[in-house]
Length: 394
Ligand code: PMP
Image (cartoon, rainbow, N blue to C red):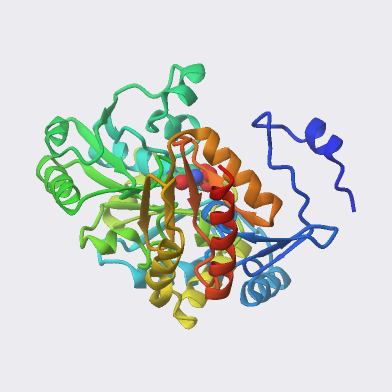
C-alpha cells in the first residue's frame, strides 16, 4: 500500500492548495474506510456519483462479467456490442419518446460538448444561450457556457456567440431568437448551490425554444439518476428537452456520460461532415455494463420511492438558527450560512468526526449534501447529530 502524501502532492497534479487529503482504502455502501480502519459516512456520494452506494455487489458482478467477455474492442460507433445496446434500450425505455437515441461519452463535460455541437450542426446556427450560475464542465466548450467568471478569465478566448441570461427570470427569455442554436440549462443548478427552476420559468423556456427552433438542452449530469426522487429532474416539471445530458451517477462509479436526443436530430452527426462527433472510449463496454446495473438497482430496490422521505428527515433534523436557508430537491441539498468561513469550519469538524460534507465551487457560503439514495435512517440521524454538533461550535 502506498498512501504517501508526498507522492500525492508532488506527482499527482493538484487542483487546489488545500485538498481533502484523506486516505481511502476501500468503500462499501455509504461508507469509505481508511487504511487505519477509520470510517467515513459519504454524504456527498463522491460528488453526485454513488447514488446506489459504493461498490454495490450487483455493479461489481456486472463489471466482472463484462471484463471476462471483452474490454475495449473498437472506437465508438463501429462494432455492435451487447453492453452499450442494452444500456441504450434501458435508457430509452425510461425516457419520453423523442429521447430515443443515445451517444455515450466518457464524462459529463464531453456529453455537453457533444450536445452543443449537435445543436449547432442540426440547426445550422451558432448562438448558444446559457444561464448565470451554470456549471457545465471544465473543457473549453462547457467552460464557455458555464457562469463562473473567475474560473473562466484565465482561459479566454473561449467560444464566441455565447450569451448568459438570468436563471428563473422569465423576461430574459426574450433574448432567445431564430439565431439561437440551443439553450443549455440545469433544471436544478447544482454548483450554484442548488437553485431550483420554477415551473413557470421552464415552461416559458420550453415554449420560447419551440417557437424559435432553438434546441433545449437539459444538463442533468448532477440532478439525474434518481437524485431528486425522479429518474430525471425534468419529470417533476412535465417538460421535455430536445437533448438530455447525463453522466456522474449514470456509471455507478465508472466513467460514462451520454447525450440523448431524437434519432432524427442525432443522425445529423453522420453527414456534413461524416463522423461529426467521435471518441475512442465512448460507450466502453465495461462502463456500460456498470451503468445498466445501476439503472436496474434503482428499479429493483425501488430507490426512488424513499428519496423524498429521506430528504425530509434530513431537513427536519438539520434545523438550526445559524442556517440561513435550506435549498433542497429530493436528496440534493444546500445549507446556506452567513459566511464561507462557517461552512469551512463545519466541513472540517464533520470530516474529523467521520462525516463527509463538501462545498460548492460557486457558492462558498453553503455546504452540500447529496448522499447515496439508499442511506439508512440510522445513518441519516447519526450524520445529522454530527452536523448539528459542528454548527454548535461556530
Ligand atoms: N454538468 C453538471 C451539472 C455538473 O455538475 C458537472 C460536474 N460537476 C458537469 C456537467 C461536468 O461533469 P464532469 O466532471 O464529468 O466532466
